[in-house]
Length: 131
Image 1 (cartoon, rainbow, N blue to C red):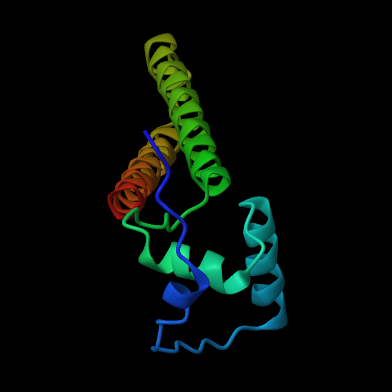
Image 2: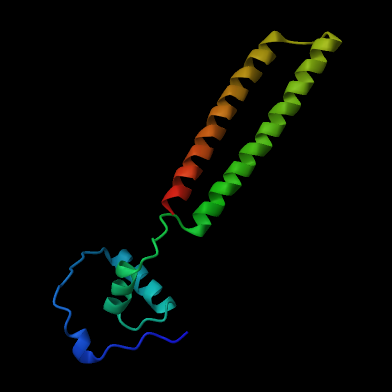
């Protein structure tokens, strides 16, 4: 596979449409860092390549996605803890030291846990569909 032939300066000058974008100083610095990491020397060349690229730009960084997965794992672990609590409540019922208020509170916590777990799952799926 060969590289695409580089355009001559005359071909580059044929670009007649101007696109102007306003950035904050922080955004400009971030864009410059990304440009340098990508090996580009020209901000306009880097911006042109990113804007015209056929690959979609991810809306979430890999680090943020990893954090979401960690939150999901933590939520799963707390679900396991709730299941252990349920077992403890059931053992208390059998042993005669059961407190009905404890079961009501457990049911409230479990319902909230299930709701949060579903919300997290829906959010992750929406993010993955966009990336």
